[in-house]
Amino acid sequence: MAANVLGMIDPASSTAIRLEPLDDFVVIEPLEESETASGLIVPINEASHVATGIVAAIGPEVTTLEPGDKVLYPRSAGFEVRLVRSPHRVRVMKREDLIARVHD
Image 1: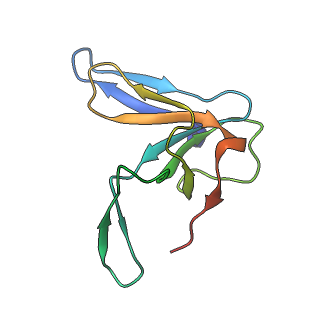
Image 2 (image 1 turned 60 degrees about the vertical axis):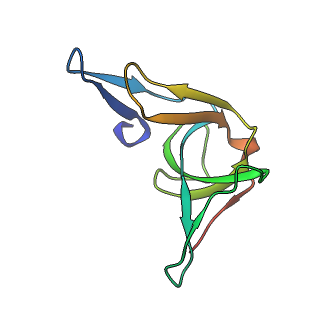
């Protein structure tokens, strides 16, 4: 179960903040840029309707994904979450909102 929990550290209190998705929710760390198989780095286009990210944590009802998988999802899907005093932002969304797993 520990692999399914996204842990963050609050620098002010030095305590771990745990974000554990429930049911069929997933936590995604959005990627700011994409790298092709040949090594070319392509910035994400803000006008694009889709985005890519890395699965950080999965709820207990999610069976088709694992933390670390790269996925494609609609840019408007889910909720953006910023954990206490952290510049690190994640997206929490339903598994059904994901479009595809990316293999590169």
